[in-house]
Structure formats: C-alpha cells, structure tokens
Image (tube, rainbow, N blue to C red; front, top):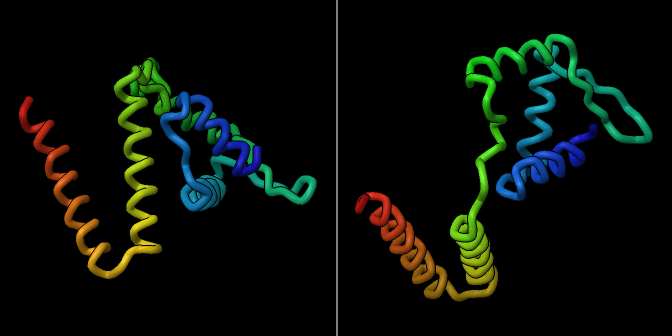
Length: 129
C-alpha cells in the first residue's frame, strides 16, 4: 500500500475513530523502513510499502504481548455517545479555527478563554467519577 491507502485502511479498521494524518504516517513508514520492518518501492509514481518477514515477526511479538486479543485500532463499538462526542469536538475545532481566521484580536482572546473553560469542565466530568 502507499501512505494514503494506509490512512484509509486504518480509518476503516477503526470504524472511523482514528484517521492518522499524512504528517504522522509518512515519518512512521520511513522509520519502519529504516528498521527493516517494511520495504518501499516506486510503482506507478507512488511509493508503495510492503511488510518484511522481520516486520511480520515484530507484529506477532506485539500481538502476543497484548495477549493477542485486540488490534490497536479496535476500540469496540463506538456507541452513540462516543460518536456524538467526536462530532461535537470536530465542530468545536472548526468554530475555533473560524474565529482564529476571521475574528478580531479581542474575539480570539475571548475564544481562547471559552476553550480553556470547556477543557476544565470536561476534566471535571472525569474527576466527578
């Protein structure tokens, strides 16, 4: 696969819960290549990666260390609450970026305060348990 194929595959396997960015995938692939866990070659103008025997052995060792029960991207069912929380977080980030791009300095300062308060309230929810 090439990098964008891997991004799509990880997103699909995690049920949409995790979509790594190109900025995280490509350095990771380079590191895996440097360690001999994958090989890379040019095909049709794209850099395609293939897991090596050493990579497969490393993968099996890591699975065994986790008890072989769950892949790292398997979170179980997301449930309605988790999906809603994720979507709300994306919408909040989009609103913050809109203020950052188009708001006045005073609006950006006020938005930062609103976000800091929201962060504190979210942690307070966890502390209440």
